[in-house]
Image 1 (cartoon, rainbow, N blue to C red):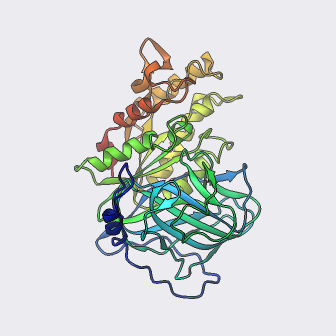
Image 2: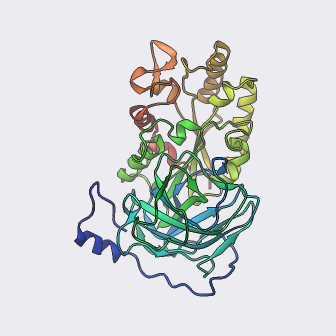
Length: 416
């Protein structure tokens, strides 16, 4: 797949793009296939996550059968052998995917002709994922360029009960409400729009050996709340652009594992960071480093934990990441003065927690988002130039400033 351009591709470019992906040979019957194990890289390459989103139970819509989702995602690392991971982590019934395709998105729900290819699962075009389970596809021949818009089309043949997905995608995807349209290049069957990702929680590629990835574990700020929709202006997106442009780093993949409203210590908006660490971060391929930006939702909760409680949670996350060979960059909790739940007591906890992040030595490195976006004249508040208007979430400029604050060298840390 070629790198997408801001304008619709010319016919000559479309033909060239179509030739970059080889045909996928599908063998075996289309009936039940066993979930395949995690991806293994081709010789001379390393499997690396190029896109990810945390899973949660989607309360806005139950699992629906006989519909096709065309999910638009934006890659970070480039490579070959594209695989997708489908999750039924929060389902209470099996989900059967009849067909799954991946192609290059042209515009809207329309695909670049010739790029939409079928994925298989242990050689079968169909797979059933049990409640609580997940499955990787087989590798797809061809290459994926960094910063491409992919369209992963999932035909859900059978489903019921709770649906698994990521609610606040900040990316428009598309739904064909009846029938299998995964192979269609056209947008015609996709008559509905959605701003959630259903079932898809990771895309992996085989990158040049030695390539790694960073996972950003966080809440709504990492999830990109109030950044401009359909423009990939979350701070991890800006970070992915920096990594792609830097010839001096081999860290190229970025997995955004933010969930709006998420907490370190307690479930609520998604499982707590402590509960979801293994699934959302440590299971992702090629992750060398995690950036931890969580805590503001714990601090402004009622009742709120003490600083000591929150610090103990941080220590657990760091210890578990280190045990898995993953480094941790600790991020200071950002100011939220002016938000309706701000209190002087909460501010005191924030300051104590940030002192720990900066000075404890527990983390492999520190990124001081508090200093980067805070107002020097009013330290409990975001600088107005970076404030989206709600006094908690940064605007696009604030998101970019956060990315610019990350020392790329800190992401090259290795514990393996």
